[in-house]
Image (cartoon, rainbow, N blue to C red):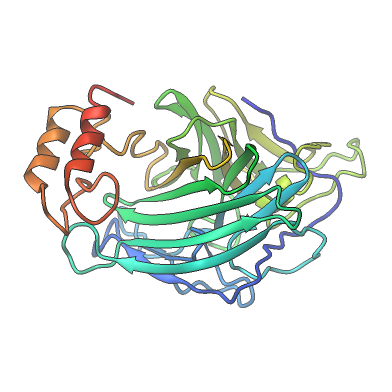
Length: 374
């Protein structure tokens, strides 16, 4: 697993975009404990309103008597091609501080986001689709992307990118999914905890509130990953290099501002690789992230999928063909698809490929993955 480091120089996060914000709300239709709705943009990102500090879209109701709140400050995907090209994939125009971080790729919305009622037949829009392009001025980068974001039960979100390389040359790039969580915000970060663990054969990060099992959130990928980050700002020692800053908000961009040229970690505690570990019980902002590498031939395509799990410190699944989420693809999943076959508004997760109907394609997914386990 790769080691990630903070950057030199104080840089507050600036999420650049050339489009007006276009958000659509999707949710799992649950009333009470387990309710989850998010305001997703065409790039598969959701976030607080950085201009006003308010959020009018994401709502999560954890188990117990805590009530509804919005735990996410910002989550989105960042694309890096070597150390020369980068872009933040979201439409938030920015929040506070310096504009010295600027992506040099152009991300352009082609269509969307459009919301659909694809699951549970409950009249609630639960799936959003959109498409966009990512390109460089010199044509080295020329990608078209179909984005799908789906909220499912229990409370988890699937973010899927189907990417095609339109360039005449092969390309290698990385997608880094960052989740900057404020949990249920009470005015400070005391007792926020970040952890690393293993599920489905690879590492993943999680974040939560010490002593409250309902306030747990995990981030994972269904693709092989380079590494993950579980990061928390802790303290600064006077003996450390003064060029290494004390950082505050926007840690996802700060962490990647010098992507490929790490300089220092300084005042962050992080856990990497496949070994479990936790950092908590102290003041300091936290965030988690997962990086998936992608290699595409000229004209080639690939799918990258990230999973946001709400209410648990372990990913809800490592395989979308595991319809009943019991950790193994078996007869029960096959029967679930067969019973829902032909249903245009399927129950549970029998619509394995998220196309709005349970058909041969979903059956083949289960058969192809039969026997797989987490």
